[in-house]
Length: 295
Image 1: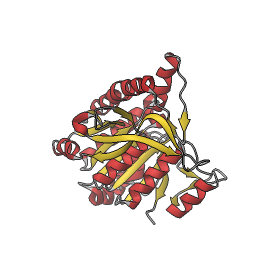
Image 2: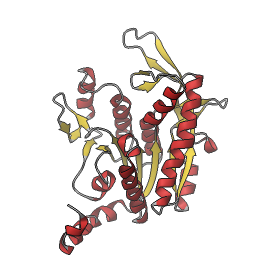
Image 3: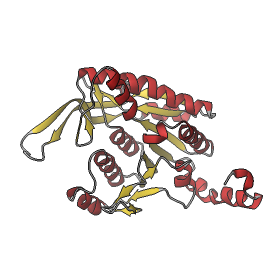
Image 4: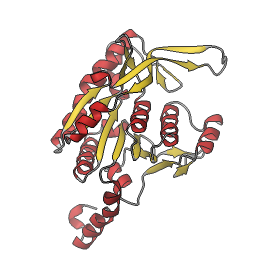
């Protein structure tokens, strides 16, 4: 149904429904992890940009964190490399790191900034290297088959510190920070960091009202593939141990749980393939995904 076919009464009712949410979240910070189809489909990209600008204009502080998995894969394929993942994390040798930094900090970051600015916002692109925003050290993954051994996956970072001062400075000027998930080590080395993890940590440090993770699934799915609308850490642990949650969903869920346990009021894993998913999740009673409870 097109907007033209809606009666004025229905349009007014839809707008009025947003009022309590605008009052409740006015002046609050919402961190959005942007990824998946919402980042590659032109129509969904426009929807996302307009959602961000609208939310900013009605008084929310929006911080966008993005990855760029499909775009990284495309460029790696063009230079003859194949992406490899361990426990949902990209194995990142020196050559892959160059590609990751070029794609995330250059192509993707500027594309997101441009989309938001074209929609009427004031977006500023950053990586974790800017003003040492995201400090990191080398991440070593636990080996499930041999717990005494750790797995080295290259230049993949584990966040040690986030400096929120640059984000606060931008927000005070009405700018929308758009952050690429790249960190910097104590000796200036570059680290690739999972964007879900970055979004979660930034939400914690900013004491955000909400963390919203856009995905290519309806949310968290059970063994039968049905959407779970509310989930607790205990249920998540069970879903990981029985294999219901695996691969790329693991860092997403771990990040969401950490954020929920560390002061972020609500965490949502939502379907980024739905038009205006952000507005539906934040300004209406009609959620489009899974809410992670902290207990």
